[in-house]
Amino acid sequence: MDKKELYRYVGNLQQMAYVRKVTCEDGRSSGLRMYEVKNGCMEYQLMCDKCLDMAGLSYKGINMNFLSKPGLQGRNHYDTNGQEALRSIMGGMFFTAGLENICAPYKNDTGDYPMHGRIRTTPAEEISSSQEWTKDGLVLKVSGTMREAELFGENMVLRRSIETIAGTKSVKITDEVENEAYRDEPLMLLYHINLGYPFLTPETMLFIPTRSVTARDDDAKGHEASYDVMDEPKENEPEYVFIHDMKQTKDNRSWVIAVNDELGLGLKIEYDTTNLPYFMEWKSTAAGDYVIGLEPSNSSVYGRGYHEKNGDLHMLKPFEKEKNELVFTILDGQEEIQAELEKFKNTFRV
Image (tube, rainbow, N blue to C red; front, side, top):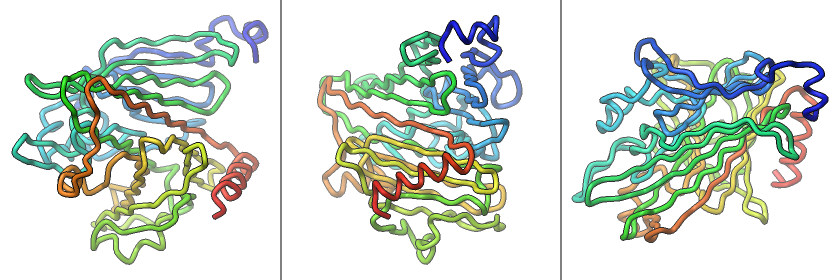
């Protein structure tokens, strides 16, 4: 619907779509600044104080993301304290791991690197939001800059924009990372995308264009064949982590689709593999920790020490930049789901 036609039905666009800045007041989230974005039946929240990561995503009132036991929270003393980062990792629809480390805490003679790094708890600067009519429609956009830096150390900048077009069911995340120091710097980056109840149930199926699936450790061994299905919650079940060798298109695109047939709802996650050649899956069927994580990355799940040992830690030269783009698209109803699954099968020949 174009602008003139839309205004025949509404006097104020916030009736159907808006970008609204809010501040939380309760518990661990007290003081957390967020942008709440509504696009028709789709809503999501972006955390200004935590890398503009997406706290939640819902569609027609149905929650699609995981939220861990500590719940919604702002920055706190657990954030960069080694293994205790588990007390501050809330999950959300996605959080950004990096930029010096991903996955397990790591220590070498140059420093301590907390679980999933520091960027996920870095507050945004130069934050802006806009609602602008373009030839494509009404674009709802939030942008900001995160700087991970240390005196006599790194100076890495992540510039992020997240946008959606009114009347669509897609959200695009565009990231640019630049090394603004005068030395080569490591760049480790992982997008931790977390599916949760009620979208995630034993009815949920995953469609991943994988060539092969490898278990990360002994806990995951023997479960590789069921990477694409979810089980009922089990008390105290260990997490499973799988490493996928992903197929991609000629223009370096790949995507995964999660479908809950009972709800008639799907989620497609498409990304550019140019700078994200790794893909991991985190599957936890543990009661109370019920989640599947889908993780495009530029580094292995084995973390910084693994790459240092192999001599292939990814580096950025001074003032070099890298760009990533991810698109989340909600699929509503069997017609949309089946059309995307047919495209998936034809593209990747699975």
